Length: 344
Image (cartoon, rainbow, N blue to C red; front, top):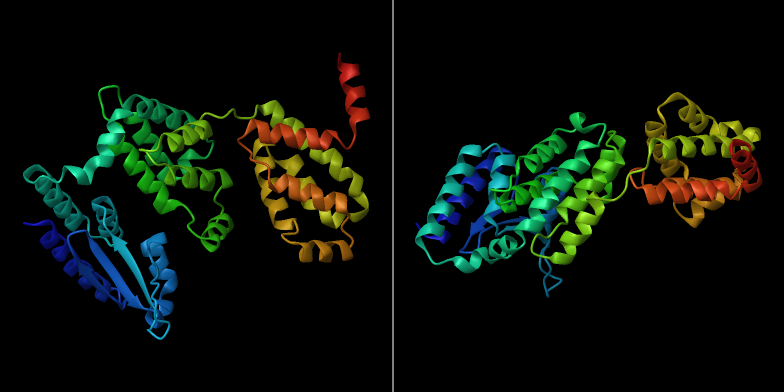
């Protein structure tokens, strides 16, 4: 069976499935893959569900004629993306059949150039194997790993790579998982945050989803991310203590700072810092207009700046946490010096 014929069969399956789900639009196929197309009017009737299904693949079609009716489309040219889509639609059996058909085609035809990226990856195997160990080590330190099913799957996959294995396919699967889980738009990232996703989880998914295995700079950047130094427990404790002292300056506006003060004293230092960062992100002025409103309501500039600084702290990055400690020290350096002299 030719590649185009395989894609035509997949387009039929997808068309049938979309009708069952009561979605408008149509699927077409060619040698390169399968494509979905839907009128703009029909798209906006189901845009939330369509975006959840297609992710960042669906986009408005650009035309030279503004008089033409608007359309949205999603193209699937990578076999792995087609397989993932079929699985999302609960068509795991069809996904397996498609994978087997593509594998058979690879063995019986001269489509070597289609897999040039894999050959490029193979030359970097030693680095990629080492990176799998770094990913496993990085995720193993997450205290909430068991609460995140996808993170656990990525950790298991990264830990399973041995010196005898090629890490390429495993890494590609991990990247696909991260790409599916990440927030692709501002509203989905906000939804994840509202649903309680730890910001470190979102940051990891974004970093892994953007990893390009055949790009040395991308690999280097990602490895730097997963091997960065984590703050010590003393860093977390210091930060919470100094936040508590700083907030004590604003006892005259207790409504403004009481919740953060409560968090600082009720949780473990690391978890307290996570929740205070989230609270600061909610409290800070996101633009000049909201900052001006906060000022008119009585919020001091010093406190507004504090929220902005705290919201930008990366809780698993030692450099970021220590820079924030230094920022807090700047408000009361004399007392800090006296404390250090007394303890020496």
